[in-house]
Structures are given as C-alpha cells and as structure tokens.
Length: 75
Image 1 (tube, rainbow, N blue to C red):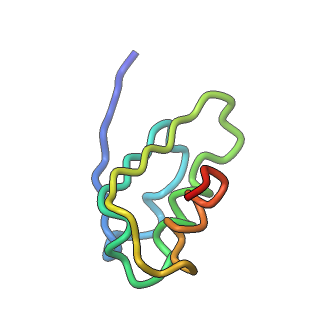
Image 2: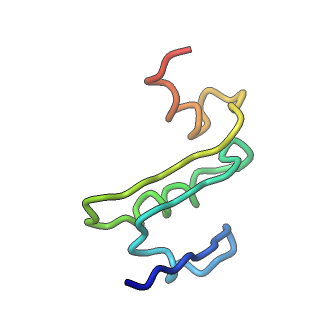
C-alpha cells in the first residue's frame, strides 16, 4: 500500500483537503479564526478510522476554538 503525506497551511488550495486519515495541527492557539480547523475537521469524510491531533499551548481567549475543544476536560 502506498502512503502519502501532504502539508497544508491556510494558503493551500481547498481542493487538496479531502480524504484525510490523519491530521496534525500545530499551534492551534495562534490562529485568529477557526476556518482552517473546520476545513481539516471536515476532511475526514466518511472514514471509519481517523486521527486528529492538536499540539498547542492554551489560548487566553475562552471563545477560541482550542478553548472550546478543551472545555470538556475541565480547568
């Protein structure tokens, strides 16, 4: 089986963001809006086995996407 890795940023073409199996998002707390996060989150489609990893420091903004992701974990 052939494996392929693709690297994306907010300037990448949207046509390339589909059928992901694994997404690793580094420094999510540094983004100003959640647009790229939402596109990557929806890129899994109907896959059964998927992995979305976020590596980041905490955001000070309680309305930031990272703060909302961590809210169920408690303070």
